[in-house]
Length: 112
Length: 139
Image 1 (spheres, each protein chain N blue to C red):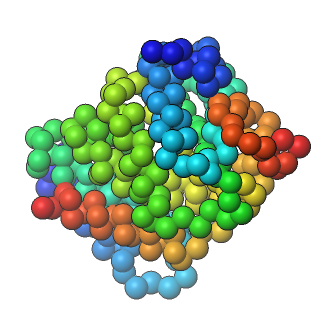
Image 2 (image 1 turned 45 degrees about the horizontal axis):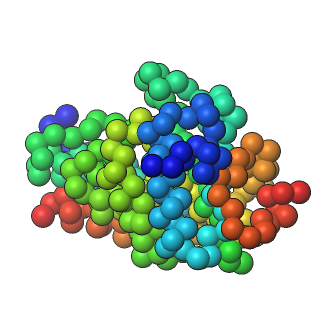
């Protein structure tokens, strides 16, 4: 996919997860934040480095190779929250907010 | 360089570069977090049921970092700091073929599903330990 296609996908996902619907699964919101963050990372890498990965496999190593260790840490934090939703207890509102905060950091990095 | 597989009891079936990456990660975490109680390998690699390195989706290495606290209650900043601590290890071992998935837990493991805790207790390989492990992991 081209950079703009990743940006469009990220914005589509964000439009959905940020829309004011009631009774939505909190885990699903974190999944959405994770998916949007991945799309923003693809976009940011393509714009800044003219290459990106189409899969989240080895993404942390890839970002570190680019010297983007902080972005890798944001991504890992979001991934950690996501997996916490799978294996942990009930997902709480603060976890969703934390996921949205990491998504915002990644989006800011990608677009600046 | 010391043999990480012996130093941290890493399984012999784990490739050398991934073992070196994990060894440096544990060094960094143990140095940065005095309350780090244990690092436990669990999941398919612990059971030696991992997908091979040449498989399209080779297995990740699943690690659990246990902290000597009653509750984890991580803020976003603390979570970010944890993963930033690992960053130098990634920079030194960029060719490690397996991804590492770190999960975080308190001594009580109360934040985790009982099934998950039971799986870790059944399959887990303690790579690093400082102090006495909680009974939820040893019973």
